Length: 105
Image 1: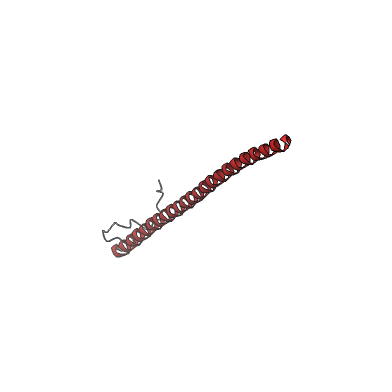
Image 2: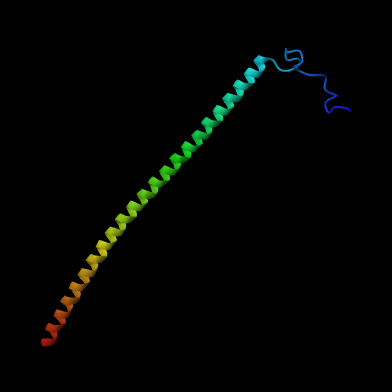
């Protein structure tokens, strides 16, 4: 029965010297390059996560500033409307008194 690998030229590592395979230095260099790429990829991924974290934090700070500014505006508007309401009450009372004086004449 024919083997699936009959067309292969023989066992590559049959003689213990690696045969036609890559040298140990080439394998070592390839592994080192692969480690560098993985490390660079992890560093790049960490940098992206860090940048996204900074962007998210900046967005939160910007929203906090906007919220604080809006709260201050609301506080000022509430005070202004309260002053206007109090002034309107005083003015109505003054006008009522003036009308009463004029009616007495």
